[in-house]
Length: 395
Image 1 (cartoon, rainbow, N blue to C red):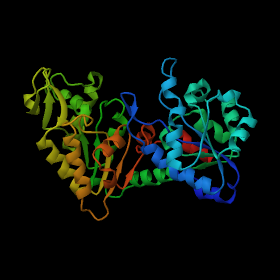
Image 2: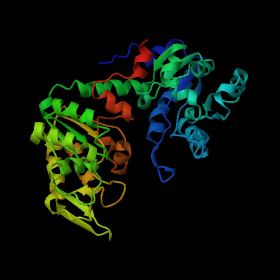
Image 3: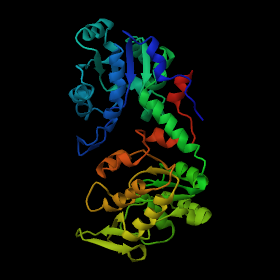
Image 4: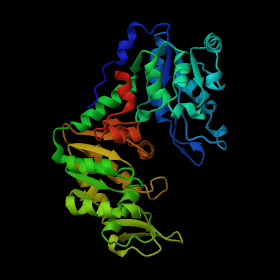
């Protein structure tokens, strides 16, 4: 279990008038080319404001998306500069130059006009993902201190995550500290038998390790979304034209055989056919041309009963195609159980993938004890795995 040896508050004594290179995550969720969720930006704003109050000068670095030659323009961090400025209530200078070509005097000149600089998308430079020492040194040369406020990328061995700490005094950010402390609480929860984990989304293959981890650990594991289709298919249930992972059916079957009723699967579903006709079906009655888009009322009530009575909850991923009404109804119904849980010491954590967007869509963010900004890092951490980005802060 990782314990951070340094604290963000340790910065207090020597951050005044220092240059801080702050690794954040501006890889904001988008839908059809439009950013639909600014939660990550909202969550890092207090750290930036705190450093500014301490008279620090800040260099923001981040990645966004997976750039190639065709989509570079749409993934430039320049597009976010005005939004960032509004969130932190401070002027900001964007430097679009190739990072390897930026001279120190350009940084100094920019800081004469404002206290915050934003550099271009780190993934525009191949050296970032290859963890090139020269790239790490270049970024380090701009600052006196490094702060990692990007828990969501701490599972990556990239230059901005594990490279820079080799050359600068390095500290966790406020949000990163909260991520670690709350997720450690989830992993070390005392009453495992009354704890529930929910896994939704599309692919079993990306979550199989964490599903197995919580099947061993918690009393009940609820499966929803397209992942449930793979489990249903492994039971030789006709899922019509629904999406599933054929390569994962044997593993799904073995888990069902071993863990039995510990795994909760849909009993009824909402389907849509080629003519866009929506139907409520028992899982035994799904037609050949129908696709499963949501869980049905019977399943909603069953899942609700598990969640409303549990002592601890982990929620990762939607239970249906929540982006499109009325297929958000299953997820929205079960989320209400989080708010209505009456256990005195109830502790709930949500995170990973589309979970934040799902909660915002359902207006349910306030229902949870903690919401993680992490995706892959979240999934790795909650199964007890170490993260390179956290290790590098302790070296």
